[in-house]
Each structure stands twice: as structure tokens, then as C-alpha cells.
Amino acid sequence: MIKVIPLSSLVKVFSDEEPVAKPFDSVSCLTNEKVQLQVAFCSDNDCDIDIKVESKIKDNIKLYWVEEIYSKNPVHILQDDYTLRKKSGYFPELLRPLDGTFSAKSGKWNSVWLEIIPQPQIKAGLQTISVVISCGDTIEKVQFNIDVIDAKLPEQKLINTNWFHTDCIATHYGVEVFSDKYWEYVKNFLQVAVDYGMNMVLTPLFTPPLDTKVGKERPTVQLVGVKLEKDKYTFDFANLDKWIAMCEEVGIKYFELSHLFTQWGAKKCPKIMTNVDGEQKRIFGWDTKASGKKYRNFLTAFAEAFKPYLKDKGLEDKVYFHVSDEPFAAVVRHYRKASKIVSELFGEYKIMDALSNIKFYNKGLVKLPVPANDHIEPFIGVVSDLWTYYCCVQVKGVSNKFFSMPSQRNRVLGYQMYKYNVKGFLHWGYNFWYKQFSVGPVDPFTETDAGGSFPSGDSFVVYPGVDGKPLQSLRLKVFYDGFQDMRACQLLEDLVGKDKVMSIIEEGVTPITFASFPHSDEWQLGVREKINMAIKEAIANK
Image (cartoon, rainbow, N blue to C red; front, side, top):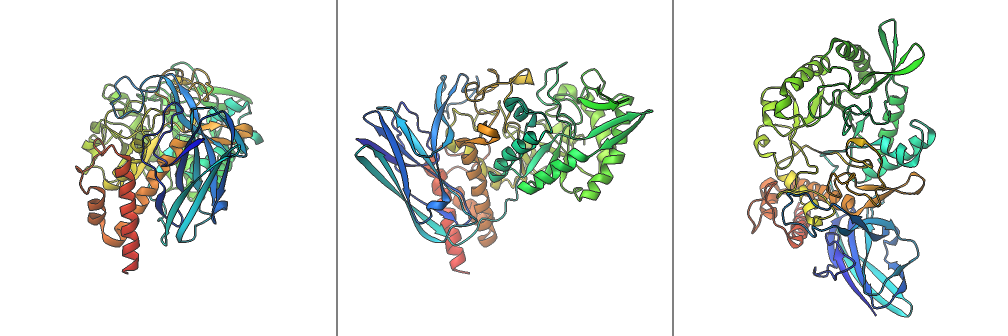
């Protein structure tokens, strides 16, 4: 006997317990929208399971087996109770492409994940999908009904960056930086990021001084060649040319330039490798003062070469500079000096930094602040281009995407960002497969918490597959559903106005904020259905 349950993508199916969520077998979408669904099942004996799909849109459907991944550190010590499990153990997480059969253990729950991918769109009207699950002579079937509305999601307006760590790719696969394999693998991972909403990429002009232990360094991934001869700097942009061409080919639109000063204070310089008399040497790093004359002279020479390059490439409106990541009140003196240098050299460009103390903005030290979603309130209504981010310590009341959190807590960010007209979102961990401070690599399949430093799910959303091909997490796809929710709201706003959209989102509930929202899959999914039906009605009445 096999028990099967059709489910939404918001349910995390643990192998040791039957899902308590209501069956979910009907959903609506727009013609160019990805749709995520699940079928949970449990067999009363060990068997090889065969999965088949019957549908007119079969060619648009990908199947995955949801694999549990172990978490030794699933929660932050201050994490609230909107959490699935707080003890270490296995969590539904990794999506393995399903091809053929796989073995199921007696009494253990499994999940098959279905993704409908528009290529480039799905025909409007009712589409049915039958999922047939076989175990020997036992066959069970479930059917999903998909109401495909004759409308398209608008292009994503939100700028989204999830820090892309090319050194982690090189380290894991053992490939030389800038080798053919390196470029191939980097492109593979970047394409998946773009497919799920990332349109800005962290660009390592110089090796990013991020999450690096003082006195240590990360592998060199510096794109800009530097040569020092007779006290004069010259610059080679050949690798940067290649990077930009690759990024634009896969769909990247914006370039987030690596930080020009060290993290958490801007006290020191990033690692910068330079050809000095024919030998590659590190001329800046932890041992060089950020505000010193030597580094200022270097940045001045770099600006004189780099700004004409940006103009020639037509990138002047597509680049964002950084000073130093996450400065705090105690380092304002150092940050002020560094900010002044960057403003004097690159003041005509957008300059952004993740920070949560509005005093940095009020003092004019950063043009574009990116506050954490649990510190964003003072910035709302004050900063015109509102951005936000979250990471390992955003654990009380707000959205995040740890293993241990319900998927609804991941997806709800879309409605929140829509309400507050957020222009950009930043996260630090697309593929950080190192321990904290980059002191060594981890196997992301077995060590999911950066060496015990961050809750599982904070530091990456993709896994390294065979031959440089990324494997995806369910969190990556659920997060993208939030972006699609945001775009659907924007489409409806164009048709009926924002007040109407917000009345649908907040109907019958306390007005949502970044720190307060209904903890309910039914609410999350129900709002989207109402949005879709309102779009359908508004188009019909035009």
C-alpha cells in the first residue's frame, strides 16, 4: 500500500512524520510563471518507486526527489518559535533531479517535487497534471488542476543580489582560477542564480574582503590585472571583460563591485595582487592602513582608468560601489574616512552598503543603505530607494530561509517588499562553502552551518553537483515564488491601483510589516489566488 498526498511547495515533508497540511491539488498561475508543487507518499514496505507524469504540458515539468540534509546547528540561540524543529537532525532540503526509480523505505515519508517551467510560456486555460506513483503492482495517482490565466508577470523590477563566491567553486572542484573549467563552472552556477531571480552579481574587481579572518586571506579571484612600474600603476581589464560578457549572456543586468575596504569597520585594505618587476606580489591587505596615502594613491590611479572603462562599456548606470560591509557605531571614524575616499573618487555612481544604524545615512556616510529586515523601520519613508537584507541573526519575527524555518517564512518576503516598495534585496550566501572567516572548506552535503557558526541555510542555497553543475535547494525555489508574488502584485497594481492590492493582501488580518505577518500557508497561498483572480477579472473588464 502507498499513501499519497498532493501538497503545495510550502510544506516541508520530514521522513519521520506524516504531513499534517491539507491536500493541495488546485492552483492558478500566469502564462510565464514557474509553479512548484509536491506529492508526498509513504509505502508500507521497502520498494523501488517509479514516478510518471501524464499531462499535455509534460515537457514543461521537471521532477525532483526531495532529499533530507543533516543540520547540526538548525537554529540561532535567539530564534523565535515560528520554527519547524529546533534540534539537530535531518531536514527536507536538496532537490535531486529524478530520473527513473528510487528506493523507498517502509514507513518513511518521501516527497517528489514538481516544477512547471514556462518555455517561454504555458498555454492559457485549464491544465491538468497527473502524477502516477508505482511500487510493484501497487499504483496510486494524484491530479493537479492548474488554471493558467491569460496574462504575464511583468519583468522583475526588484534588484536582487546573492553574493556569488567564485573562490568556493574553484576550491570545491579543484580547478584553477580563470582556467577554462573555472569559467565553465562559474557560468553554470550563475545561470541558475539568474533563473531564480538574481539580476545583480558581486563582481570581484579585487578579491572580496568578506568573511575573512584577520591576517588570513581567501583565494585570489581578482579580475583586474594590476602592474606597478616606476611608481606608476597600469590596469588590465581582460578578465573583467570576460566576466561582464559572461554575466550579460546569462541575464545579469547589474554589477555589485567588490568592497574597497575590509568588512566590519573599513580599517584595512582588501588583498590586491600586483605585477611588480615581473613577479606577482600582494601589495595591499591586512597589513596596510585603509586611509593611508599609499592606498589612496592606488585607488586614485584605479579610478582614472576604471571610470573611462565603465563609460566605454555602457555600465555607468549599472554598477554599484561598496565601501565596507556592515559597519557599526564603534567604527564610524574609520568608515567616515573610507567613505570620503570612495565618494571623492566615485561619487557620481551609486554607493551602497549593508548597515542597520541609520546614523550612517543621516550623517551622509552612505548614499544607499541596505538595512537588515529587523532594523528597517527607521529607514521606511526616509530612504527613497529602499533596500533590505537578512542573514544569520535575523531570527525574531522576520522573514528568513533557514532549514528549520517554515517555507512560508521564506516566501512572505515578496508581499512585504511589495507593500513597502522595496527596490533591492541583498543576501550574502548563494554558495559560501567555507567555514566562517573562510579558514577552510566544508562539504555542504554534510556540514551546512559554516563550521558551526551559522544556522543551516544561511550560507548557501545551492550545492555543488557533478562536473560543475549546481544542485538546487527547495529554499531557492520557494524564495523565487516570493519574487513572483511581488510581480503579480505589481501587475494588479497597474490594473486597479495599489490600494486594491493591499486590501487583498491584508483582508481579515492585522496589517503586515517586516516583523509581523500571518504564520499561515493557507493565508500565503490564498492571497496569491485572490491576486490572480483579481488580475483575471480586471483584464476581462478592460
